[in-house]
Image (tube, rainbow, N blue to C red):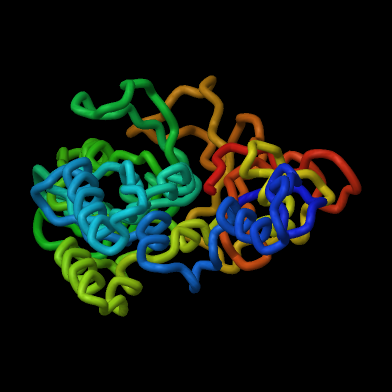
Length: 368
């Protein structure tokens, strides 16, 4: 998923130049060496995979998300030093939203150059399973109280959060009471990225008239990943170790091509010449566009705008008017690919892909 324009033949450099004074074989070798385009996702070597990959990590309780990321970076770099000592190390990794040390679950982690695309996780939603600890006997209408929190709600981040404590709106796509045992309830929350489940549990307690706080919390999905194919830190350690010994099979299950983190976004297929131009910072022009496709499958979050700041929060933090949204539309985030399926860039769709001229995708992040 990424971007770009067309014109030059595939065998030439992005600027169309040819090495002076060399024979045909030398010129072809130079073009191959300097070609910024990656191999197709299924054809990449282990070093290429590690430098542009994604791991759907099952974060354990205890370490912070930052500590987990640092460990993943260092472990991958140790492997790269063993299997590709002449190649570069990865400067870092990027995860899909911070989880507190005690929280477990889905922490998709982008590696190497793929960290430039970390914003793709903001375009999707999150799913959590949480224990709601009521401070008194559960009211008979608890399910109805919980249902009132579906839709857009106002939230102010907790005092210990790392972001500014400004009132903001987050959407709860679905909120289910899965089980109840005395003063405990098991909630499944499908929500917009940036929702504070701790604050949500607190507000539900206030609405129920007995008070409540969040117990155990586990993240079960971050679009487009879920808990069906999670891998532990030990899995990653074993996979990297076996890869060093020559067995890549398990590593290719644990570390996936970074393109798999973009499947929930619209895609623009562009000509190889256009992709090479993107590598130099050019936007994607209409002549370089081959195709525009919507995501193959839907996600549980349906998007939507954000309510404007003029309305006051109603009781329990609910936004009056339900789904009545304000706010300006934004140009959709898209990923541009080569015809071979390699991601080129992230950008905003600003023009008509069927036009004869003009900019179609404005660059946000070059992924080459």
